[in-house]
Image 1 (spheres, rainbow, N blue to C red):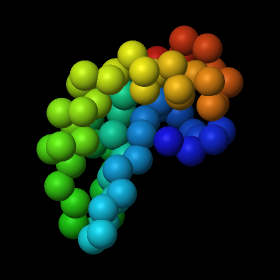
Image 2: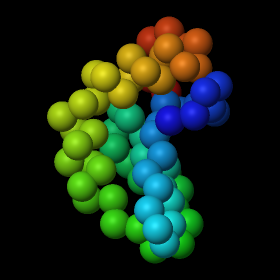
Image 3: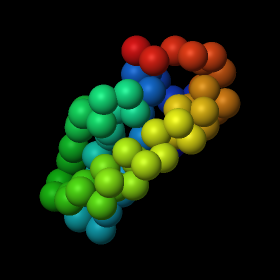
Image 4: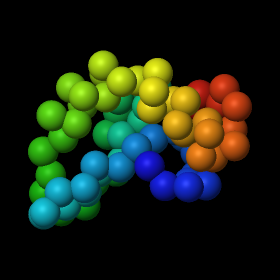
Amino acid sequence: MYFADHPPPHFHVLGSDGQAQIAIATFEVLETSGRIDVRDALEWAVTNQAKLLALWNEYSGEANDNR
């Protein structure tokens, strides 16, 4: 997650051969570049969705914006 990043609420997964952006609300893969396997990140995110959204709101200043 990056400070003051653009909506919708999402997190970044970085790998040695690529990266992805994943929506926090739906776990939809929004964007990818290169080759990256996001399965482990998605499994972790499902368990930590509330924490991810709280961090998004803290870092972005968007209270309860779940677009």
